[in-house]
Image 1: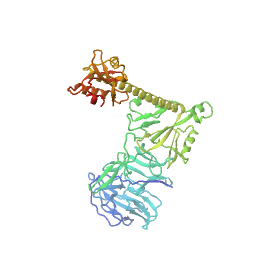
Image 2 (image 1 turned 30 degrees about the vertical axis):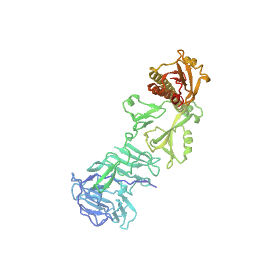
Image 3 (image 1 turned 45 degrees about the vertical axis):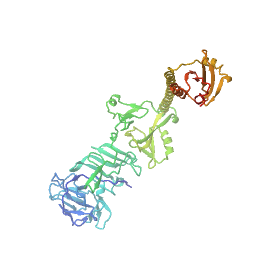
Image 4 (image 1 turned 90 degrees about the vertical axis):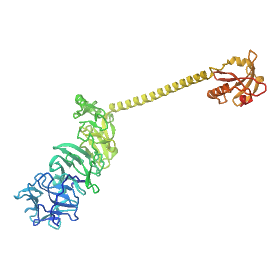
Length: 550
């Protein structure tokens, strides 16, 4: 069975629209070829197959174009590497049954290149899907060749790209050399038949970009912002959609473009993260192989282990492998390394399977694939900001414990720092509050006489009940006599009264400013420790009541 992956894809490059003569048929037969400028049209008029050229070139090509879109929109080119030099071209079925493009000298510039055909019995039909199909007979026998299996640089809807192992070939897209030259460019894209199929872009036949493994639904190594709808001449996928309102194609790039897209950017055991600077770093437990190169931004040499795996040390010592001495570091949201082996094991068995083989250096799991294992260098590892899979890196226990110790140290240090800062802040706040209280008392009381606690205690017989004039909301009031014979009334604030320093000072300030013949006069106050007392002029006619007991 061939491995195929369906994609809804289109890439077109825009040029000028040229009018061409069209036949009413959708099929080419040995007796009914098309000559420049003739063309055939698919049954519903979606696509046409015929001759075209670009605005700034006299070269002529045979291709498939959208028929009802005013801008010349090309989805497939037959003779892309051998253009016609004039308008003498013919698209025909050859005597041996192949579809061929001929010039005026009857030289073959392009051929469908299939064998074992029945002479004079094949036909080529353009379908509404945009696929040109070569069949055995006009009645639509088995497909012998399809343009979808020999694409140029464009995917269109219903097209499939994959590997056909039993036919010994693969479907491969090739970029154009330029916007008006459809000959093969530097880039190609194909599904490579590795242990797990992957989409591979090559630049000058060298691996340039990989999509990661195919899990039956998506490529797990790319962040898609839309469908894969085209392949650009710079080696990028392009999505193009026709905007009837604008009368033009609208471009977008469905694969998120980052600095990490280049294959193997950070070398073996390096990890690329486009959100960091520098973008390359070594996996935990590894260090740069070439420190000088890394300092200059050349990361291709990659990284090497700082400590050998325990299973490797056991093997070198001739002892039995200690499986428990190696463990795994979990990395989340990752593009997995290139070219894994696979197993149908369930998730919980992946770890044990990897530990049994000392050459296994990492594993991952995906529901559509199963277990993935890596036994050599880990190349093209990338950190995603979303999506991706969990990748488990094999490390000796000493490296894992080091991480735990560092984590404990960091957490402990952070907690200790928070405690110290909190205590310091509390101490500072209390100190400042006390200073504010002392300053407030000093400012408000500096113009009033301050009585000593012992003086007031003596004047009231140590606040004896016989001296008590009454009980107010904030405490009792006592009658007293100073040493000079002056009679006073002492309002002693109760500790349980709820009146704090602020209320006390308000009362002192208000009363000290009142000067009226019918109002009591404030002589002074006493503030010592928790004791707060007001000293009034004593008036026998009890006109003090409103102040003293209110």
